[in-house]
Length: 343
Image (tube, rainbow, N blue to C red; front, side, top):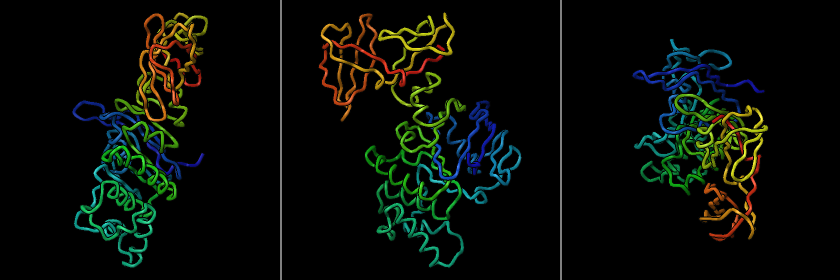
């Protein structure tokens, strides 16, 4: 594996007796995007600020391959870390044009050199035609792109984005993710994104870390984390999930819609099945014992609620589902979209 450009180890931070980070480890690798996903108060922005040098820690280290930048006693200032940051509010200078905002972080090189570099970065985010506009003349998405270009312009080794897309409407967020991801990948930097948006994290990340109550509870390749969560909390952070708790018997957990392998769980123990809605398959069956009780269109997908004879209701997400409400179906569960965890 490529040596990380930034390694954070055992980071701890408390405030007024409350633990904000507890023994947090994370690596940022050149050319890869790491996303930290968690709810408000999880500690993810504190982690980003500690890596940036904007926040002290009680203990633990933030280090590059060559030196320690934070160790709980000393802290290297942000301007000496070769890190670019995009904040949630973009933090643009209102009295400077888009071009001058991007040029601001380029030091004291001759103006023409700085201008050329800044224009190159504005072009990378498809905004070179708005170089002379002031922030108040730009849309939210355009301001976000200027902030990204400013962070990229000094060609930092590491780029940090703190909820950078949260202030945009849903349609614009989707567009901006693609533009930003293209520019970030082209930079070759190690990238950290902190977000509370599961779709954003899954779309952008090469490595995904789930954070709750100051702790990283699961990390790995996004598809793996999504498909096989290690706990209810981890599953819920990435979207809707069906949950069923029962007793393991014969190495399996029997749900109202079939048995799932419970490898790793002891017979007689209580365990919970976590099944994503797209892991619930429905087939029309007039003799079936399960009933569709609701159906909602989600664009190309439909969300259906299916009720078992015992009254249990699970959700299924399917492409162009035509099953009408009150119809009978048989149900199958996809073990690749199911995880069994301790209850």
